[in-house]
Image 1: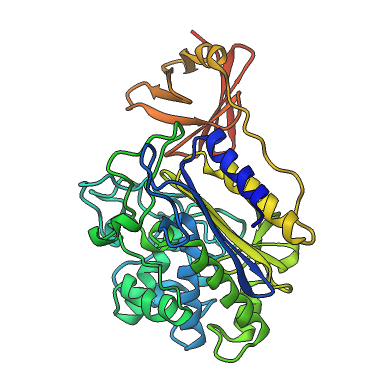
Image 2: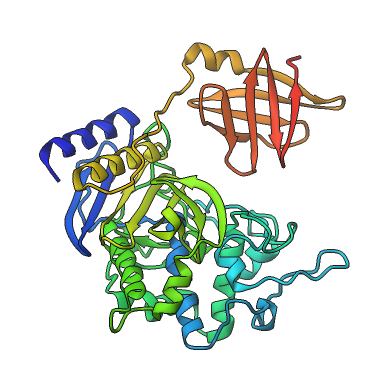
Length: 440
């Protein structure tokens, strides 16, 4: 990448308080640029390199789905079969008197109607749950149990919980632990030599790994969180390995000899299954495991774990694409700007020109948010400031962190809940309902 573009990326790191970044660029199906800037950890000099490990966050999902699709090609799984027929150690639960039927196609296209959007991870030293404890929502798991509460197949409903169901399905069908199975089915065959579904990360790999940082650019306690939800969030990798994965999808689509998938199944994977909310690069639908844009001509996935932000995007027909990974909670703005610069430099056709700008509330505005608000006659909540976030305490509950999405909007870390400040009060937004909450 030209020195001028690198200088702009380094300036973004400073502006958004993100310590480090790494990227890899595909052109004509070949990696033509591997780059890095910044440091592994704030206030230290160890530089990020193109071999630095980052958490892939939710990009773990499409890589895991590739393993499932390879089993479909082998006849061990079927896309449209009730997964309860293959699950041995856990079953999609009944909902009252109704037994939902959920298929692999629905699971990997986030249309299965399952709960649990994402996972907060576990701090260093915390006991980590098994996949079965995560699915049942029992200690030491910190999430609710994974359940169907929307009619399967009817709409997009992002579910990390559904991807853990895929993880358990793969283990039950093969009898092989998930981490080992991913090495066998995907990572080794594709040559993703710097990738591992290892949670927690082994101590001998710590010096190679980027440290997670919060929105103020300070390291998270314990360096990073661990994610036993391996298929949903547990991959450690590099941008070079991610674009290698993307090229493997294109090779399968093109029918290249020895590719990871049959051409028919690869074409199914890159066919829109359900419309979705938009991601970087105009991705606005779900295929099988991958977000799609331009009717499947563009594919990719974003990722967001505590202290890490990343994105993968590739063009089906031209062999162009890139992966960008950062080690900061503000990294989504750096990632989006970096993609815009790469797209312009390499002439990506149809790439959206607009880039989101971070507009955060200033000190005076943040101070004006603090107070107590009435949600219902017998339920109130208080708002306190915590750096660039707010802590919201509902009566009888522990404080919940809400992150600034704009000067007026704050979203919860651990629930699908938003607070929108307007006219001296707050609008509480949850499950499609909006409730005006006056200040007390």
